Image (tube, rainbow, N blue to C red):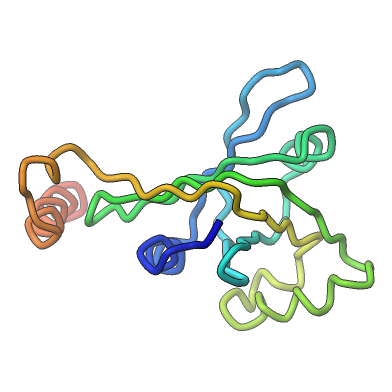
Length: 152
């Protein structure tokens, strides 16, 4: 499935994705990954740095759902797809690794694998106030005020 411009914008501005996987015993597992990049119109990827549980879950069931959220506009993206792990030292790793050197220079040397997600479903999510006609500008102003109270 094609990653729309709206979905791409959220993912690129807020690359912290919450990755949902399933454990061997069938339990849900959720783990944040802060190194997501959009590789092309149908593929996302994150750099695996210290995610042994996520990697174990993906090894036995190669599917994941990822959620991204724009905390200011209160809009998000849900992405579901099959995953492929490209380990450091493998033939394809270096070609992918270079994508993380620029945006994540301090983390890039610690990357163990690149996990690609072939997007099968991509869905934009919005908060209910949009149903009532609230604008993005109003949402941003509201959440700026809320965060200013928390972090004066």
